[in-house]
Length: 151
Image 1 (tube, helix red, strand yellow):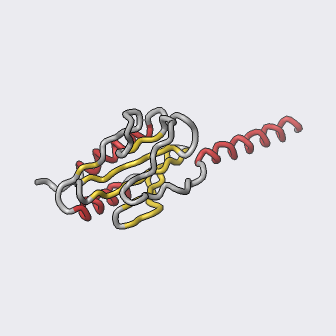
Image 2: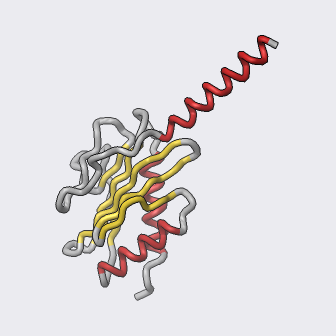
Image 3: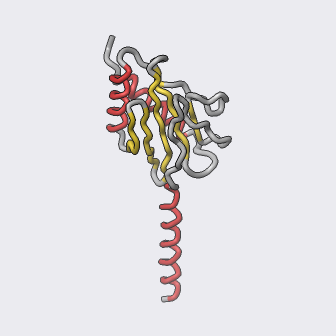
């Protein structure tokens, strides 16, 4: 009987540890003017505004009306099972992106002048994401471009 109690306790502690992988929603991710927060030194972040190649990813280009492009992005995100918009401004979106037990933070910043949407995606926990943030942003890019009106 003693062994069963210890096994149940071990499973309960393990589950609590796994649930903790979601991490806390970070403060300070908000955009400052037209600039997204810089990526940390760890490789689990990508940003279209990063200066270094390790973190740099291309922004999402668009043609036509910037508001229509941003609405298209919101539609793409709404159709994904792993994305939840948690903050929305006319030129900015903050999104929680879920992978199994982990939550990453995504940001999208509309640049009306250059006709691009800047992106940033970063893991809340850990050091490496094994490229997940980059792959996910590229997947969202493909969906965004595929949903563009035909010229």
